[in-house]
Length: 558
View 1: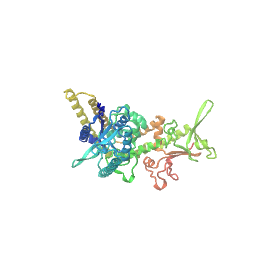
View 2: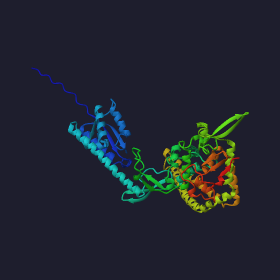
View 3: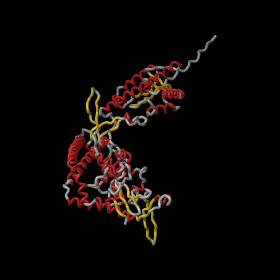
View 4: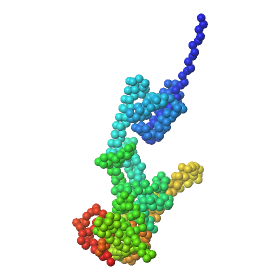
């Protein structure tokens, strides 16, 4: 009886494996210790199993508490592809794959449906129910460990902030990180003022509050354009944007010297309990008075507070002129008679709601504009009144000069340092020590920008010192004439900006027009007439003193 040989079964093809290697921080990746160790162990494990390593997915500096990891997402996308190049994802431990128990289990089950297994070198598990349970327990324990470590790190960083140290975030423009002290291998850091960048911060605030000397105060967008046109750049060499400039203008640490640490959760963006916020002491760059003036103008120009037509419209007293009877704004109206156009300020309450709300009143636009401008010039910018106002300025000039001298010395040191670095770079290029590649070109360009900013700041300080001559009656009279000329000849936006800085509102009545200023502004401008605290309500926009306490701001309607 003849026997035939049984057919031999074809050998099983070796599994293809992809390695997923991850560390949590960029510092760990730069240390180049953990990643090579993970690669070595996973490679040896795959060789022991007879698997062929076809892919490596390396994630340097990404947390595994969620799936917001670009390399991880690319790996999952390839795993779902029918033409994938691997059948197994091999990790050193499940904590490298995920530190969220529920998300890890869901992802592993989805991958199994696609025919891809996830295997841990140090925590081997199988497919039976008890081993699945063990894997889930490992995932939950990894999540707990991650959360506990995060809580301890947060507590340590908050304690470091309480001691006044900087915890490593990118400092705002105008500051730089310096070493404060060493505690073993740990380097504690603080912020100090960067003289070059600080001058750029002062320039931005001055442009917004005062202008560039040619026009009136600039808006946020115009300030951004001014900086970009003249070649100013951010710390990274990029052009300025409206958003970053607005963030700078609202950053209180520039004036208060207090940086709030722990305001938001860096991962979710949610605000923390205000009681847990720590304020770190940093050197102030700006005087508080300038910062508050900028905040007042930002609030005034906010479209949610003040309509854009009030700020940018062509009507001089829009937003200032109000009806004395109902408090509504005086809006622009007009009529045409005998081929001529006539413009008026009219009560908006009467125009929009009828005479049952307010009987209404009208006043020729040109007449009210001239009346307000004439009285502001007459009452505020006479030489006698300016002389009294400038007395306080002279008293503060001494302290300011000392601060300016300190800034000039620091800027000169920074200018010399930048020039020395440029000189050494040029010498190295000429001698062939380094090649003039794109990286060197960017570095040279950055140093030139910093040098030019320092030089421009020094020139500006020199002009300020040269112009701070003694205040004489002749100078005061010339200044008075110049200001009055600017008020008469400036464009509408410049005149509006000035009027809004000294006037709260203009009350238009049938018998008189009352010009009312802010309490603090009036106290500073109307020298010799002290405002009694019990005669005014503070923190109220539409304030006016009781009785006739401010006769200089009252003018009978002609």
